[in-house]
Image 1 (cartoon, helix red, strand yellow):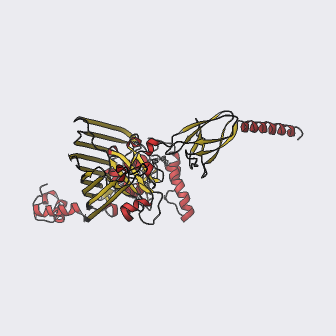
Image 2: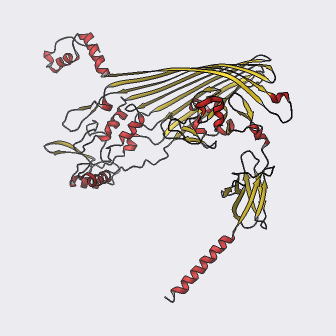
Image 3: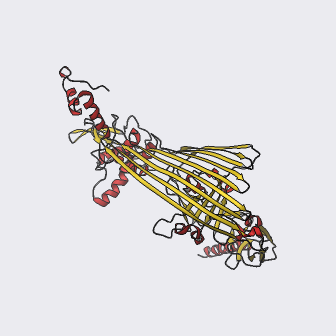
Length: 618
């Protein structure tokens, strides 16, 4: 004990000295951040230059930060102000910083409702995103590109399915009903994710209640205003731009699931036994020993086959001892994608034009017959100066997409059901090539039969969307301070979903008949749903800018008055038919032979020399 006490004391002294030395390497610097008018600034970011260590100023503009001993450099940034680097000498522990307004940013023009305004004159909560901020973001939709670009704009992605789009809300969900913001594309109600990102000139996000003053109750959850690019006067010369991308996408979550038959059966049986007192997979001790003998076999060994045929309970049965990776058998890890964008723009001072097109192709995770999403965008804009006080413009856009997949009406349901009752010891097919769906060792159906429909390719789903919009706008400027605008918009958009299902054949016993899964997902059925909507909008409004008259040096006032009318109507068509192929064959057989399909098939069950009657030509 006497030897240990001095040793412990020495260690404590060493540790204490080390901690003291470390604390001596840093010092605390406090300060204030003001604007040019001596007003404190809230939320200013103060960082130690060259590091990620930083703080933000409080409501009275103060901050405290740990900096290295000696001379330190602080990096101070705030939206709307010029960034600044401040040197703090080692002899000072407090500092006051003054930030200058970013005059260029404050003079920037912001789209707000039926007009534009300088950012310096805004009193509402409006944020803007320019095309430069979006051009280097690689994603498939404009909504995803906005993620992290605007404070308070929440972008939530809940699905990785090709063609899926994120949910958007401004400053959180504050209603039990829909809380989606109103989206206007060049002044027309539209879908943010159906806009080609390369066509965007700027995006304004109106976050507060000021949006309702212009757009009414439908803008209660904010407004997103998208302004697309126009042609430019280039002395008649045309500019062609092209951009393309090829690549692969992978899942962000791990798909390294259990693929050893022994541990798959053992684990499930352990929990099932504790819950219900029975085994989930009805294997005996001999079967578990056979699984254990193959637990390290990555591929099937000739001496240890993964499917064994035995006679049990008086009949032949297949017993499954495999190590199968169901995720890898059904789905692929890497999925190719490609994007192409092309635009043609130009014009003179009297006529300006822009034509753009985009193509986006995404491949899904289905392995045997990959699901594919194709998206097409087309936009044409024309600005024509009639005379010195009148301008006519036309903006036409077209969006089309189709998603082809396999499944029972929904690819999401197909993925979910395929993971059920598909233990690693079971293969997808029996040794004779028939599908495995039912086995006497399980009370449930293997993968709910989804592996059959994913591989046979008979359960086809096609989801199509089309969106056409045309806006014609006339702007009359009789005086420099007055502009009168009138526009008319027609929009047609349609969603069409088609799904086809059919019976799936399987075999349960080696000497058993070929059975059919013909209910539920295996029903022979064709479904189609068509939703069509027509939208009409007309607006007339005037803007009077008092600032142009310069009544005084400090007055900048714009008056806006107008009226608008909108009308939309839609209809939905649902159609379903069961036993489609069988009914068609029945009709064709009756026309060709004058016999029912049952009677026609019955004659071929007789001996060949006894077959008589007409023959159906196929």
